[in-house]
Image (cartoon, rainbow, N blue to C red; front, side, top):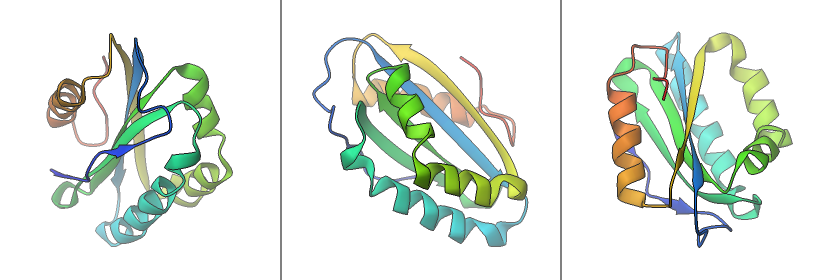
Length: 135
């Protein structure tokens, strides 16, 4: 699994519980992966302005046509704000019919970069193709 560097958000110093979200997109056609990856990196450039964003990793398994993110938030309200972001809505509409999308969330007692990635990696590694594991 390939993974981007951690990209801290404006709420990087958040104390207390955080909400972790895993997203996974499995493309039907491997030719769609470059466009999906470019869209993900373009969206990540908006990260610095997202209220409640603690940080994010982008990940990919090109051989399995899977790509996604592991993002950390201060709570549900922050995630909902991101989901409604016009750039996010546009990406979702553009790629909706080109594969399958799944997501899962959980709450961590505190932000611990290593532990959160370890848990996310474990969940993604045992996920059946096209479905992110449930908490």
